[in-house]
Image (cartoon, rainbow, N blue to C red; front, top):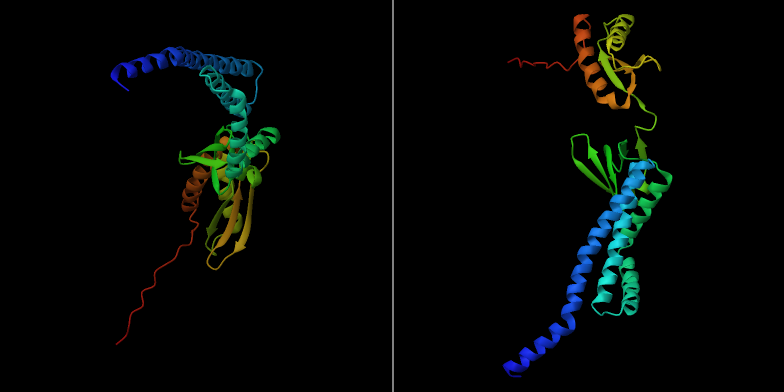
Length: 270
């Protein structure tokens, strides 16, 4: 083909496909704007009706994906691609992909189960799959937690829905479990009074239920006490650290020994 033929051929392609390409680009731009507007409207409606934040995030992600798939199908039709045959190909590809990505489908199903049964919601402090954190987002395939050291933890929904979940936020209060050991020369009644004075003075510890203070073990070198105050879930770590520090100071002030290993120096005689 000479240069003129190439130019004529290029002109024919532009005439035939140019308007379709321009229309496809316009549909993509307008469609993307419409999808964003629709999602904003759905979000606003959900907020007015006070939908659960976890359910909001999940449904908005799902609606967004569905609308984008529809937009892509419309664009392909605009470009002249037969959408009925494309749908058949898409169905076959979907089956093949589904078999290859059974784990992802399981994660999707797990996300649906989390939305239906609601064992957790955004803002809950949970322990699951060996991790502890506050639920940040429940997405289509994964759930994101913010760890206690501000790490982002991502757990697949299939594992989360099929495993054990400890939700510390459901009841609104938590028991702080502490163990303190004192020397065998210590007076048990006096020691209990020291623990009680620390708990009574702390403003975040609840009066009801009442704290537990009891001897739990006569260990090899110490009398071990369990000290178990109750507090609101949000105050757990503040109470944990405060009581630990203040108890040490109170035991020192009362002259009650906290046993610790003593190094013994053995001198060889020669």
